[in-house]
Image (cartoon, rainbow, N blue to C red; front, top):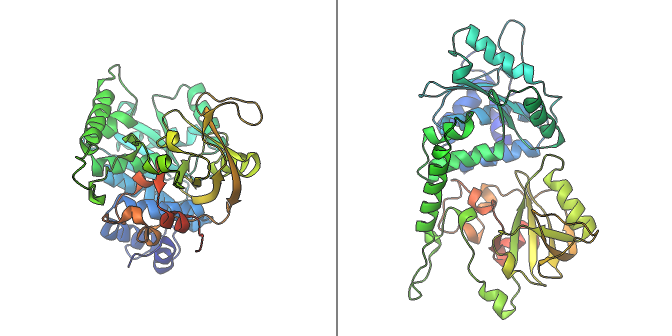
Length: 397
């Protein structure tokens, strides 16, 4: 039976920087190494960290982020939770077999103002100690639990200080996605380096990676002859790349149930966006390439997944998505397709986490291992069964 992160932390004890093999931090890190074999498990633990406040969970998130580094085939040195004078206080030091070093700093949304000099100072210190050859072989990487308004300030600071060749920022969600790509696709450690580190003059390596991913996705989504039923095990693991075929339910008028992910942006969290659009505005907007958008119709039900948090709202469509201004008269080129909503229910403070226990009950995971990567389920708008919709929204029959 899978253990939740809170259960694990209760067993290992209070995480701190006390030295020794039997300390809580070493027990926790050892547990991860011996038991967390799939990216899906890490996603569950990180989701719990992001949803729970407190020093214990902030420190657990730091260790989990570092552990993702090992999935990306880096040799990871775990850093301190709290800096002390006379020691380099990095959160993590990832060494590549390709002689490249990434020094990480993990941030949650309740972090204090971020000063770029702190992270560059860690790299300078490791260079002075000859643990990193030079800045030519190094990168400082901020890993953010949940993007918020401060993230844009950090990005602007990196640009203003002309440190784009030294510092990078990535959300923990995207970092998990990179790890899942290595697990599910022909993505190599060199590919990961090409994405993370400052790019050289040639763009070919990134284009090659994209081409391979699309090619594999096309192989997995080849149409199946009509005489053969499509089994669950044949479904694509690369849902974000799949073009959704015409929906039979949309032709017959049957009610369709949808799950749509909402990511936090630089100036607004996913929950605030859902509250503003769904709760107050009674509408939602989709992009040109949103899967299933053309099949949506009045009477369908839709649930909203706040990335890394869980399902936090659901509503009924009172119109099909149309290219039109929003109720306030504004237009957004990125999300031009607007639908009206009714009967909205919001539970922002009590999200439905899509954890391993829930995934075991979902129709969508039949024939799949619920412990392995499950980003495919929440990275793009998708149709779900009535049974799954009820579980995802805590509705009872």
